[in-house]
Structure formats: structure tokens, C-alpha cells
Image (cartoon, rainbow, N blue to C red; front, side):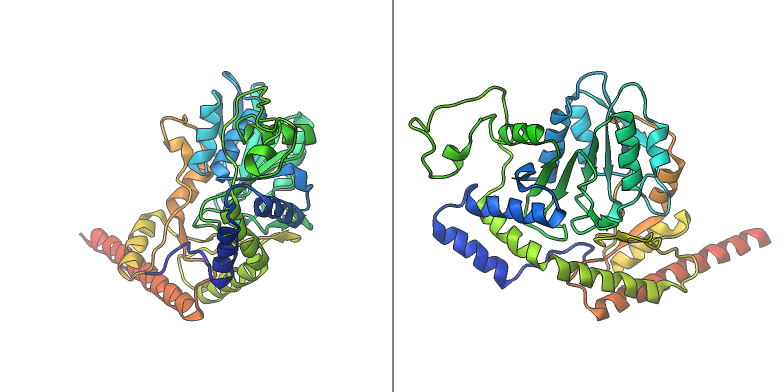
Length: 390
């Protein structure tokens, strides 16, 4: 079975874990702090504003707390997003308000976001679909003009950028994911970036039980004459990462350019091999100055055959999927009229895309896709002709 997502782990990561294991300190420590600094440098933001956490989802929940959500507040976000986005809003007592997306890019435009902003809007949350930056610069400008915080879900975009500026650095807060399916992985884990220094210090406290100084609990260092005393002004949780997973993360981050280079090669090969398949639409080209992480490669086809094609590919040991199921279809989150999202959700299929795919794998996927689409379209045409004769 060819997987849609698959990590790339090897001897370097194993050696890094062994070093952490041998150090006899596997909780949050020097390796986690170093990984925070390395990732902040990669994004181009201050290291003290970056926190290594146990998941991007935890970061989203904490971000909603940091922007001060409460009952009656609203957060604008695309329905074409992960369930954690809406869960984080709802858990804070606020209401998700869904904006539409372009049915081809599956990213919202600035106009899509601005169209649903209202007097109760307390924040805007966007993600970069498949690693494509989208109109993040324009959306950030809308948020600044309206005085509304912007939260970036950069889970799919660890190497994406616009005009040399990294995705995740446009917003007031941002999260990245390092779960088992992401481009770089720590098994589970993520990063939270908070632009405002004072708010970043608060985020650090809330990420570890609300402690003003967590160093005496997360290292073996003596930091005061009574290092065991507690200084807590507001309740927090335990969301921080650890040295074991950070050791993996540092290696993965060093390998990230090679990962993205291979993913780009695969995407370009898909483009070459599929450009002449009737009934298949390929992903849009990147605008000038945009760099993608190539997390997803998606094709689009008639809604009448999309699910059938997915079934045919599965029988041929090629796994495909669709991410993300529209959130406005979930009664818990509320409904909306979103034609672009509806079209995308009916017609889009994600093909395998990970750095472990060989050129032969890519040829297999494209060959099976071509066969499935041609077969299903031919069957539809034959059925239509037979029906008209009857």
C-alpha cells in the first residue's frame, strides 16, 4: 500500500534519541530549549517567543485562551480546516464563524475573511492548505486594519514563505505540527509562536502549570534558595515537549530542506504525468514569491466519480484521502452557505506525497489514477448514452 503520508526517520534520529536517553534527562531540558531556538531561527522570529509543546492542537487551545475568548465572542476561520481549529474555539466558549475558500486553492482569500467579520469577531484563524501560503499577507493586513488578532495554523507549512517571510510569522500567534504524518515529525509535538513578548511569557507560564519560573521543575539546576516554592498567579496546564522528542526534532529540522526538495520533485513529476488526463484538474501554480512545503498534492475531478476513483485506487493498493472534511457539515459547529468549500469537498482527492516515494511509485500512482478516471468517465458516458436510447 502506498500511503498518503509517511515519516522519514533514520539512523541520525535514532542516535539523537540514544544520546538523550544516555544523558538520563529526558524531560524538558537543554535539547528542547535548543530545538525551540533552532526552529525560531528557521522561521525568523525571536527564540524566547517560541515554545516546544506536545501538539499543535494544544497550541491552538492555548492560543484561544491567550486572545481572551469568552461567551459571545466569534472567531472567523475557513470551514476547510482541521477539526482541532473549531474545537479550540468552542472549548473557549466562543463561536466559530466559517468563511469560504477558493475551490481550486482550498485557501481563503482576504475577501472571504473580510466578508464574515463582524462586531463580535475576537480573532481570525487561518491555515495554509497543503503548505500553500495563500493570501496570508493580505489577510494579515485585514486583521491589522480591523484590530483583530490573527492566529496562523502553519501545521502544513514548516517551510512555506511569501517574499522571503516564513508562514507562521505573519500572525500574532502561530502553531506548527510535528505529529507522525507531518513533513518533519517528533512522533507527537508542535511549536507555538507568540509575537508579543509579554504574552509569550504568559504562554510559557500557562504551558507549564502557571508557574512563574518552571526551570526548577524542568531542569536539575538550583535557581533560588528555596527552589521548590510555587509562584502561580493563574492556573495552567502541562503542554511542554521533552528532550527525547526534541532530539528527533533537531535532526528532522536539519533534514527539512532535503525533504521539501524531494516533495517538490514529486509534485512536479505528478504535474508532468497528469497534465493530459481528461477530467483531472491539477493544483494551481504558486504565485510569484510564494514557496510551498508541498504537504498535499491534490487533484480534482467530477464529483460523480471522485469517490469511485478513490475506491479503484484503494483496490490497486494506492491510498488516497480528502482533507479536510468541511467543519460546517458538523452540527456541533454550526452551518453556513459556502459554495467554494462545497465544490472543493466534492471534487478533491489527495494523492500520496511524502519524501519516501520513489520515481516508480509516482509512475504507479499516476498510471492507476489515469486508468481509474478514464474507466469511470467512460462508464458514465456509456450509461448516459444507454439511457437516452431507452
